[in-house]
Image (cartoon, rainbow, N blue to C red; front, side, top):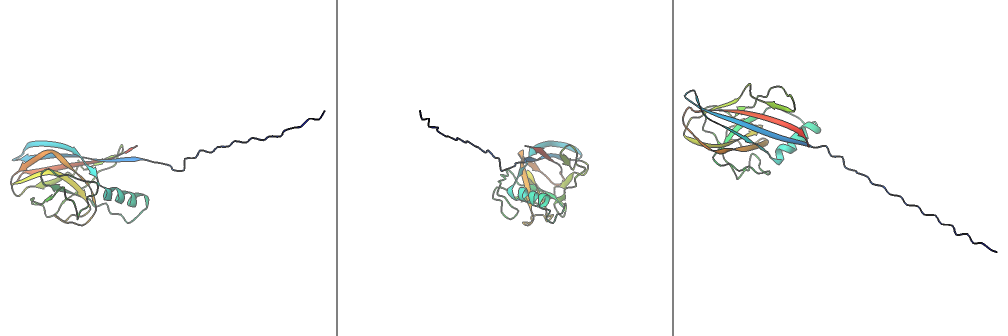
Length: 184
């Protein structure tokens, strides 16, 4: 009797690889704006900031690539009902206009304290604006150039008050900015 042997070899292999490693970080900016008239607080408004694309790119460029860096940041004010968009840059931002009706010669310096708990703010040195006209203010922004009304520099982002605010001569706006980072 003849036996035929059938040889079979079956091999199955699989490989699952995740070639991309994602390390996420959410960035946020929160503003607290206090208006003072004749030494009395008129109102306090709080709002969050949209970090625009150029601000995100600048952050990646400086932090991860080690490009030339300056820690100089400035706070500016916007007109009523500002609409910030991801594509805004200092030379082109259709949704808002900068307000320059304040006595200070330049935008106010953003002087940040020590970083703690993934947060840093300027509460010890608020950006303070002395209004020098009757004006409607609707928001604030952060940029790298101090020139009032200037269109150069990096726009980090900006946000709108909960409502437009009317101010008069000698009203003072104190702006506290808190920047945070969180794992995502």
